[in-house]
Image 1 (spheres, rainbow, N blue to C red):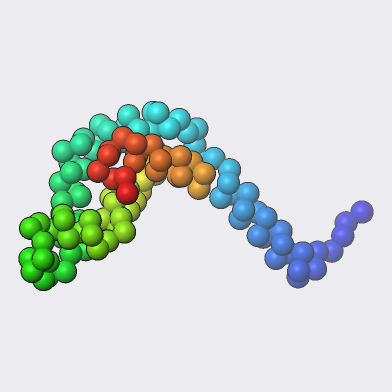
Image 2: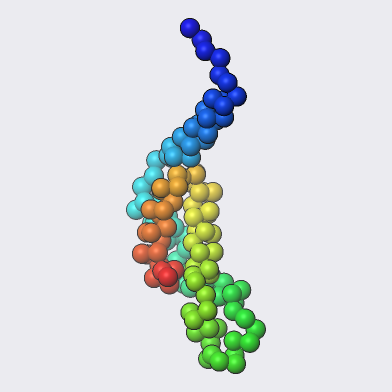
Length: 122
């Protein structure tokens, strides 16, 4: 026996399908393997350079009035925006190279990235 889906049921089904797609792994994911691939492509020196460059995007022009360096100003006035940008770049690179991962896998990967690159912890 077939039932006719109402408009409301169709919307619910569409939501559930999207939810399931977002939470179903699209690739086999091993966080340790992911970190090793990331470390190959993003050595610590590269991450440090990216961080130094990104800080400049978050520092006001008058930082010299009260601070000795852009870094000192950034630490006092920002909330990890530069770190977020770099982490997003790393995760986006990983997904581009190896396939999309679920939100849960992204959270796990981000935690590992922060643990691997101390400069990205905030």
